Length: 119
Image 1 (spheres, rainbow, N blue to C red):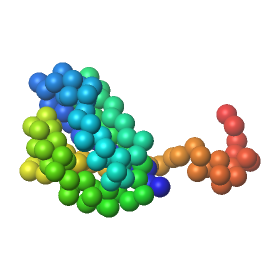
Image 2: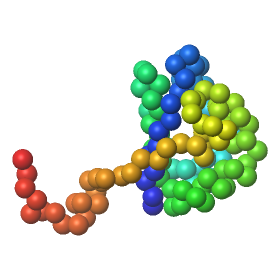
Image 3: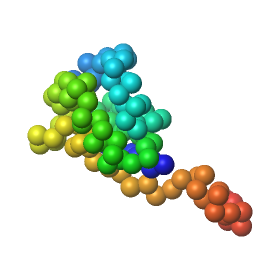
């Protein structure tokens, strides 16, 4: 399972509405996300508009392709795009900046790092 973390920048003048929109995401959008491989999905928003997203998926490429084929995603991306800075014509679900994972507790524990120094 891939762990995907990404960032986007929400426009300062749209922060309140962006928060409100995510209090009750359309039920068909929620189902589409789950059915196309976006699992354990969370969004975190800083007061200056920095948005951090995290989800797990068997394949990021496949999850994005499957979502792109849904009608609800087309509507959602069209409505959400104006909330973001710097997308340059791409949709938020395709234009995010992916962050590189550098540490995962369970992976290191599974590698048997019992001899690691505890500080």
